[in-house]
Length: 125
Image (tube, rainbow, N blue to C red; front, side, top):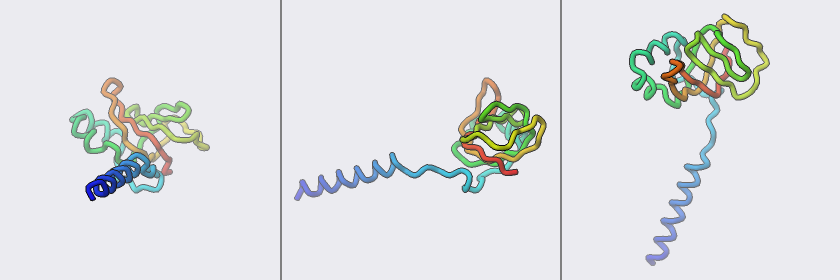
């Protein structure tokens, strides 16, 4: 009887571990944004208190509006404050000083460059 209980517990632990390791991937494009802000406002928030801001936004989907200040292959920078990395090459060619809205997943804040980092980005407009 005791062996059966141990085997059942092991099977349950294995199932839970499998579900945890192989959970489905997020689709940022279909998720609604948890926060909507501008690149400048987001940067100011991190300059005031980066630790609390990082805890607030970490792994959340956010929508950011701003002006393109740098274009580099799969990534762009908005207002020299927000680094946005795309998952695929974009059809649209970004122009410097063009206003855009981007949705992506917040992954961190770079203290050295004073930039917010976002990945899995998609163009909204």
